[in-house]
Length: 213
Image (cartoon, rainbow, N blue to C red; front, side):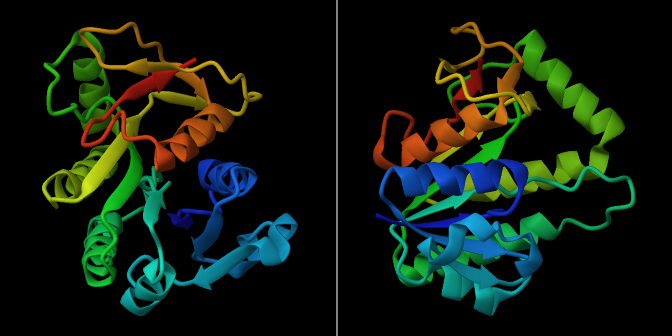
């Protein structure tokens, strides 16, 4: 399949691109800065350079895609301003409609509930800490995911709490708070592998599974 990846040069995004290539998919990577594009991709990845506010770049990246994968996440710096990813997500969804792309896979934290979940101590704590210490980022995350869940596309939102730069284990717990036992720590490599696996798996269609190691 043809997969477009946003946030492709980030820590999880780059690993996700590699996983998709290993699975034999054709990948287009949207990158804010060409200098951050891994040299190892060579000609295997089509790269589109542009800010998330650049509608023309987004349209170019999504043109021809079967699935959109987003590894975008809020800037956690206290110097960050505005809600750029809310606007960017709107551009992505508009472009998906324009190009007839109906499948979206993205990321969030347990502060976002799955539509069939009820709040638990773990989700309440994540939401409280986010709103208390990272209020702008928290609003941006909610603004992104609210749009996606209301868009009418086929989405999957993968939630995780504490990503680590540890080796890929291939062992991931996936489920929902209140019914499944989900921990906190998870390797970025395992997040990437799980994300890539959703491209051809509809188990979590219109659901927001939480994952951990």
